Length: 352
Image (cartoon, rainbow, N blue to C red; front, top):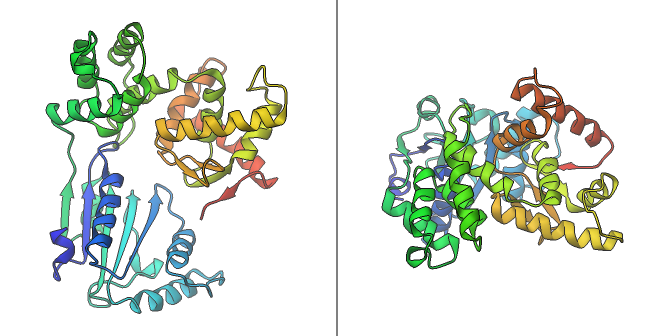
């Protein structure tokens, strides 16, 4: 927060491995900045591994109320956005999940000499990306201490676990999360209200999980997500896998899940479409809580927001046996090709 108040600082970088809480941190920074009235406007957009400049421009424009923004030219959009941002005396722009250097001028974001009142906060798994973006200050987000991990786990699991018969198991489970907030949150929510045998089984799963090499992502994040997935019922697994194969930031109306769920017979034993619709909404909300997805409109739209790790990791569980010679990435890309064919038919809409 002090860096935001420093007139000599234009760009602030937040770096750290996937799962340490960078996005949560910058969201909180935005909230505090608003409460302290440090800026007149605050906007936040996700850049992602495959950035679409025109979509990023459109999101920022929408948040700033720039209505005359229908031009298809990237440079024309950048010019309009540039002028609109310069009208803000003090503005904070948060760019989340940057994987490589992007040109802020190409988007239409003035900073430094062009606009001293524009502060930029960005997050990345790679410190060198923060350096390439010209960050004046860079902060590294590390993992939680043992004490912090245990305190967070106890708070989320929703029971007096410290004084229960599963206390020692719970501590081992927490230790397996290696201080990663996303792993702690995922595992704690998955084990909430479970019996001792399920706790012991969970610990065994976490200890025996096969390492998965994904850049910038700790292997314990994957094992914790696998555990959470394993605790889902069959229909919820189907919904989850279906959602995970869509691109990042892709808005999937729950009604689409209802139609696919009916056609693919995910919901056995339910007789009417209304019953299936109710069940789908319940699953969408539940997955949103457990898997850190965004829920829009009280469960009306579900957006997979975690990252591609889930899509890559869980799809391989379902499809590996049918195609054992394929790589994980190939399996993921094959499934995305299938989804793209469905997009052409208007069965999903981009959030950007």
